[in-house]
Amino acid sequence: MRTLATNSRNDIFIDATGAVSVVAEVLAVGEVCKGRMQTRLNEMAFQYDEGVPFAQTTWFGTPNLQAFEAASRRILQDVENVNQVTSFSARVDGNVLRYDATIETAFGLVSINGGV
Picture 1 (tube, rainbow, N blue to C red):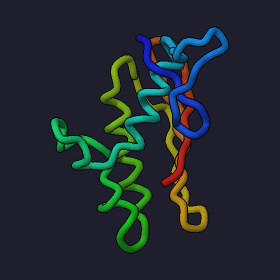
Picture 2: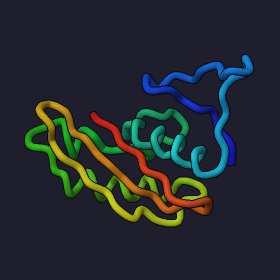
Picture 3: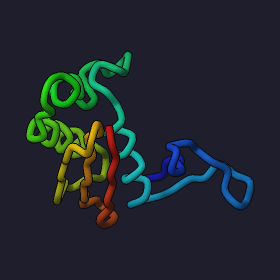
Picture 4: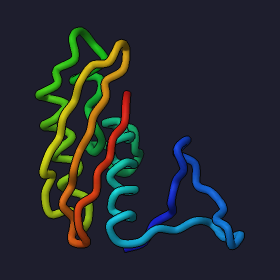
């Protein structure tokens, strides 16, 4: 598995050789998982039923961390080469919902984190 790498600002970038940076295997699965966690439900025109249901779990009223975790685990489990989500935690930090996940892939373990 291969995909484009992103930097800390979630932008693709040029590597030291002057080419667009690409990652493979475990790092590629991690990049795809991070992208999936940033996709909102109903955002994609041709996959309308995919994405994290942020409106239902986090944006209206008190965030429902259990529902967010369940939806996130389901979304991550659907990524190619993901065997299982071994751990997932979510917490509210001020006005930001933050998450950390450890994912067992066909290539090894990868950890991702983010905030909404």
